[in-house]
Picture 1 (cartoon, rainbow, N blue to C red):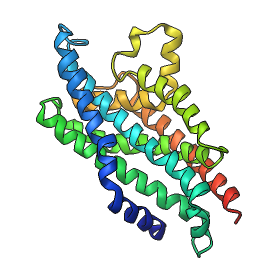
Picture 2 (picture 1 turned 180 degrees about the vertical axis):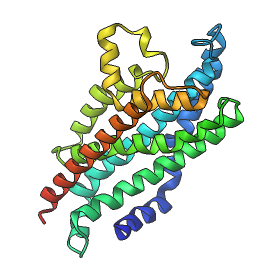
Picture 3 (picture 1 turned 120 degrees about the vertical axis):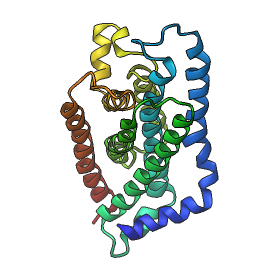
Picture 4 (picture 1 turned 30 degrees about the vertical axis):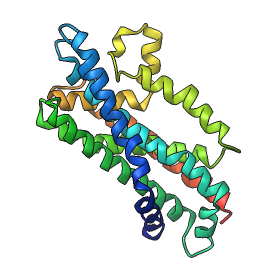
Length: 249
């Protein structure tokens, strides 16, 4: 697994500049535009909380989601179908689970780095009123695993990249818009609320918001963690099965 991880670290060392914009600068600009710009027009904040402080934890969770997706979609398809990297690794003593684990571990390292940078910038803007905000780091990593693991399984199962666009268009974009990142889920009709509650992103947003504001989450803390762990565990099992089938070992 470590040998597989080293490959992705070597690739990242050559191409890290291109990833900085997507994983860090865009969320930062979004925080400035929505949190500082739009937030200036939100009189009284949201539930008594300034809009910037309400928005930042949502963006933290959304950043973890986007980085995990960025590493578990096109790169996975490329290594499986176009570059045949996974097949080359499987021809060595590495097992399919090692190939999967190395790339998945790299994705989680990217998530960790992205959230750490975002926390530092948010602290500079005074958007983290509680020291419990540090808990956003493990929450974001757990969300990254809950998203990346099943998407790894999806990406090695689809016949082409058009299916990755379908995933983003019909699942990821709606989830990002309606899972409580930009406004409270309670502002939506009841039927749509339950769709939001079913997404792993909403559970991470509620946990991050509770942590940064230093208050209890709206839903059970244990329930949030168990739900995210369920997505991660099921996704890992499915991804391991799909890698084993595709690499033919």
